[in-house]
Length: 462
Ligand SMILES: [Ca+2]
Ligand SMILES: [Ca+2]
Ligand SMILES: [Ca+2]
Ligand SMILES: [Ca+2]
Image (cartoon, rainbow, N blue to C red; front, side, top):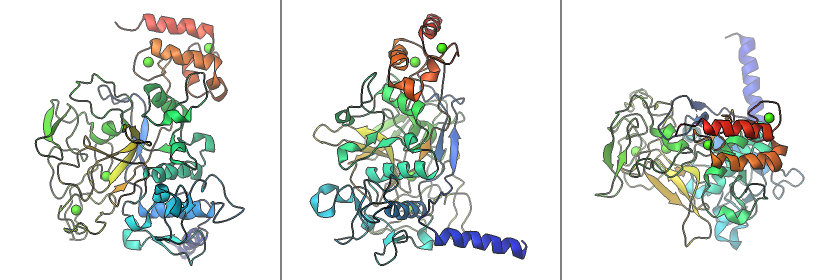
C-alpha cells in the first residue's frame, strides 16, 4: 500500500472515531434465505438474515447515537433515533436505559441494563461517547437488552441505513403497550387498535409486515416447528426455523431428539438439521454452550462467557481452540448457542398484561439439549438477561405473487378480504402489498382485477 493510501485510510478511520454523533452506518452482513428453495409449509418469500448476532460494537454505536438524539439528554437534538428511551444518569447503574424514569416503574431497565452486559458507561465523557466496549469484547454478541431494546435497535438501524421512518417495523412509545409489530391491530379498512397488541400476530398481520416494510426487524416464528401436528398449522411465516434448520441435503426422515428437560422430546422434520450449524451431532468444537470447553468457558456461570461472533469457523484461533466450520446452509453462525436471540413473536401469557416474547437457540449457559433451533424460551419484553441478544433480518424486496396476498401458495377467499381493503381502504394510499392485486397490471386495483382474481381461484388445484 502506498504512503498516500495509508494516510487516506488513517484519516478515514480517525474521522469515524472522532465524529461518533453523526449517523454511524455500520456494515450489517446479511445472507439470503431464498423463496426459490422451498421448505415444505415454510416461507414463500425472500428474506435476508444477519449472518451473526448483533455485536457489542454495533450496540455501543446505537446507544451512543441514540443518546445524542435523545431530547432529554441533548436538548434541541432529539428525534426518532433516540426517542422513547430514558437514559438513567445516577442510580443504581448509570447508563441503564428504560421506557420510563428509573424509580417510577418496573420497566426501568426495559431497553438496556448495563450490569447485564459487557458494555461500560462513563457519565464524565461527552454525550455520544459515553458507552464503550473493550477491544477484546467488541466482536462478542451484545446482551443485556430487553425485547424493547432489541426492536428499538431495529428501528434505529432502519433509520441509520437511510430506509425512511415509514419502513420501521415496530411501533414505539412511552409505555410497554406502545411497542409492537406495526401491523398488529391494523384491521381491514380500519384504524389501528393498539389494545390488540396484547396477543400474537395473525396471518394477515404477518403478511402485511412482509409486504409492507423494508426495515430491519427480528425474525418471525409462526407457531414453532409444528412437527407433532404434521404441518396441520401453517407456518408460512416461520422465518426462524427455515433459516436456522432447513437444508435440502439434511436427512429426508424425521428424528426424535431430547429437549432441555429429561424425557421431553420433540421431532425434527425431514430436510432439517437437529442443530443450527447443519448437523445432527454436537461436539465441543461446534458451538458455545455450557462447559463446552472453549477458552471463554466459565464453569461457575458467574461471568458473561460469550465467544466472538463467527468463532466456530474451522480455524484453531492461533492454537487456542480447534473449531469446526459451522456456518449453516444459509451461511449463518451461532444459531445454536452463544446467546439466545429475540424473535418478533409475542407469546400470549394469560395472566400477564404484556405478553412474553420468544427467544431461541440457547446460550453459553444452556446445556447441550437446549441449543437446538426447535427449542424455545420466552421472557417478558422488558426483561433483560446476560444470556439474551438479537439477530436482525430484512425483507429487501417485498414479495408479490398475483392475488396470493397472504403468501400461502393459493388464491382464495382469505386473499379476497385484503382485496377489498386495497380497493377502498388505507392501502390504496400507501400501496403496501396492493400492487399484488393489480392482476391486469394497469396501475390500479379495481373490478377488472377482481374478475382476473376469480379466474385465478377457479384454476386453483382442488
Ligand atoms: Ca462455553
Ligand atoms: Ca445464538
Ligand atoms: Ca393466499
Ligand atoms: Ca388493475
